[in-house]
Every structure is written in structure tokens, then in C-alpha cells.
Image (cartoon, rainbow, N blue to C red; front, side, top):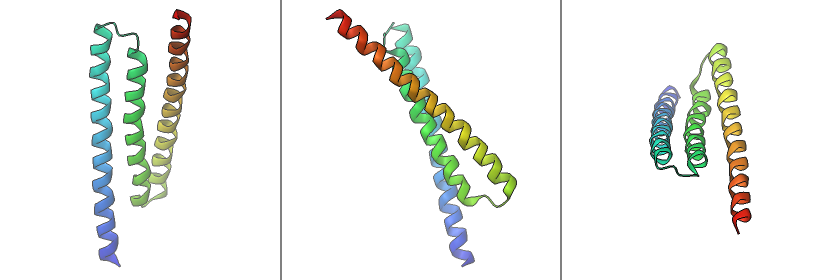
Length: 113
């Protein structure tokens, strides 16, 4: 039973690292692309940047959810829970902004026609 627990712990730790890495990579790529789009004066810069940030935060949120599997103490659970709540709130806020930005872009396109 101890061996199975150790194997599960290793798999989860590896997945956490992978999700954390992917989240950071997506956030960096979105930031670089956002700077590039801003310099090109792309009107959809904010929308594209927000979508990239949301995707990166979802990877980071996934890693925190997985982290709940391997925590051993109540204090760790509370810290991970607080991080999950904060990241979920950020993700919700970014999705709300994406929805509003898409509505603005759609309204501008309808107004131009």
C-alpha cells in the first residue's frame, strides 16, 4: 500500500510540475504576443491577451487542484484552498472581461455595417 501511495505521489507531483510549467509558458507567450499586438496597434490586443491569460491561469488552477491530493496537513490545505479561490476569482474576472470585450467588438462591427 505504501508503494502505491508513493507512486501516486510521484505521478501527481510530476503532473503538478507539468501544469505549472504549461501555465507559466502560456502566460509568457500571451504576454509577448500581447506586446507584439500592441505595437502593431491591433484593436483586438486586449481580447487576445485576456484569452491567453485565462488559459494560463486555468493550467495554474489545475495544478493547485492536483496539489490538494498530496497535501498532508490542514494548514497546507487551507493555503492551497486560498490559492484556488484567488486563482478562480482571477479566472472568473478575466472571463467576464473577455465576454464584455467580445460584446464591444461585435457592437463596433455591427455599427460599421
